[in-house]
Image (cartoon, rainbow, N blue to C red; front, side, top):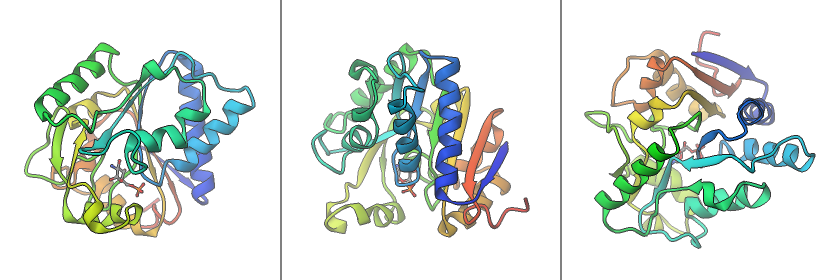
Length: 243
Ligand code: GLP
């Protein structure tokens, strides 16, 4: 596990974007596993800037996103489809046919999870998986549980996740209570994993996830077992680590 300490959020975003750029330059037809949340927004901004300068070409890239709220359609401004398009895809030359997210409007969970796992298999798995970190140690929407869920599944979001995400919705009642998420096996099968963390409020969970015991009660702790993980975090988020 490589840990890169950065000065602040902007520095974190630039360094994370550099790692993603290297992946796209070295393998133009790579599969990027992408994440939502506020942490990667600066990373996407930086990648857009470099794309506009002519330094990056996404025309052959395929993306598979981690998760989507169940019950929100693509046009809902809180859907992850909307987030990814407004924050990233609409500003680069990725082929829309190569963009993949779980379909939040599919009511049949078994059907949707099987469809999404088939897509991930058919593109040959993920080359580089970008991850944020939830305050309770969730990755994607893999919430703390008694066991690791392997494939794409439908989750009941925990109260703490609903509360954390309520800031994006008009009220707590508007936050969806379920989501589709890539499973832990899929995330762990990515060739490389890049975790971005920022802010003092993430310091305790960063310490617990990356130096504590590996347990499904802290899903991100399993990343300790992956052979190629890079954590890029600002000083505040890494402040409880002995580095
Ligand atoms: C959501 C997303 C996660 C993300 C997490 C942290 O729950 N499903 O993929 O990592 O929020 O978000 P933030 O980066 O805003 O702290």
